[in-house]
Image (tube, rainbow, N blue to C red; front, side, top):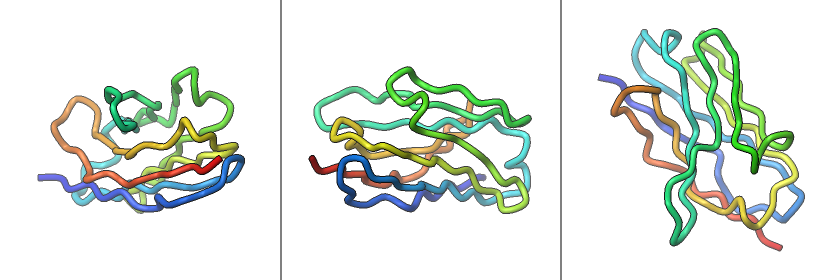
Length: 113
């Protein structure tokens, strides 16, 4: 059983930055790819990007160049660094162990204009 806990969300003005964390329990974190998703009000869940077990990353076009995903396997934690935030980035952000049913509870990000 793995538990994921996201943190770091909040209210920020457009152009600002936030760093989200996804902390995982369990000793097998390092073998999993980690995906970040978001769900905006009234919209479907969207894949933001992910990081493989080897550290390779991929991003949705809407966030490429602004968001950076990283991981620290020693801390069982993945990060989503979000810069140049826009109001349309407002959403609940979730992390997921790729290919599993393990999800965090989500953290709210609100970007004001």
